[in-house]
Amino acid sequence: MTDGDKASMFAYRRAMNTIGAAALLMGANFGMADAVVGPERSLRLSWQTFFRRKRREVNVIFAGSKNRTTYMYREYGTYYEVDENVTSQKLAEWLVWLKGL
Image 1 (cartoon, rainbow, N blue to C red):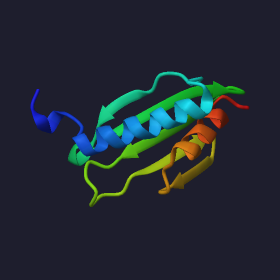
Image 2: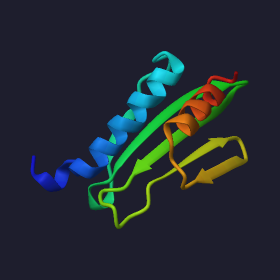
Image 3: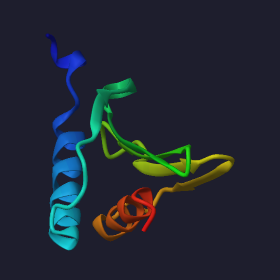
C-alpha cells in the first residue's frame, strides 16, 4: 500500500476529531461506518440503515487537504441534503436522524 492509497493525515485527523466529539454527544450510540479513501486522499465515511423500507444514508467526505472542501450529505428516498458546515453537532444530529428518531 502506498501513501496514495491512504487518506491524508489532514483528512484522518479531522475525521477522528469530528467523530470523537459526535460520540461524546451521542454516548457513542451509532453504528460503524464504511470508510473509503477518495480522490486526492480524502476520506469518505458512510452510515446506512433502512427505515420504512427505504434506505437512509449519511455520508461525510473529509477533504484530503485544507484547500479542498469537507462536506456531508444525507439521503432518504427522494430527499437529499448537502451541508459544507461539517461539525460534530451536525454529524450527531444526522446520525440520530439516520435511526429514524
